[in-house]
Picture 1 (spheres, rainbow, N blue to C red):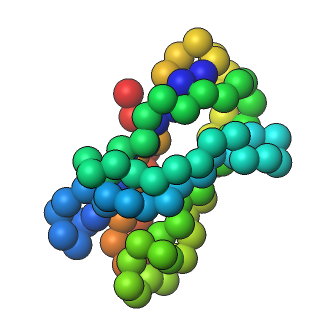
Picture 2 (cartoon, rainbow, N blue to C red):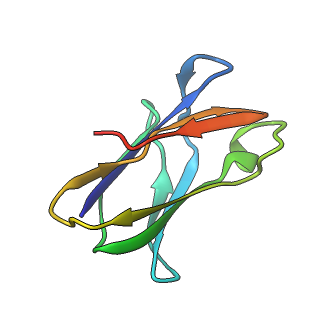
Length: 99
């Protein structure tokens, strides 16, 4: 399965560059890194099953109610690409299954 994410800062209206992100599968970290200048992480690989993508929002935002955002998702077709975007602000966030 290929995985990507795109994080947008709803306060500034800009990509959230430099935000630490990690992908977990089976209780272990399978990939980690930081979003690029466009707020993106691409090219990660993982297998079928339940995954967690963890966004370290506490180190990115100066003040936040959510120091960490965890999105758990299930991969049933590892041949498809999976994209999990995040729209972020200090007191709210939203996500969806992207394409």
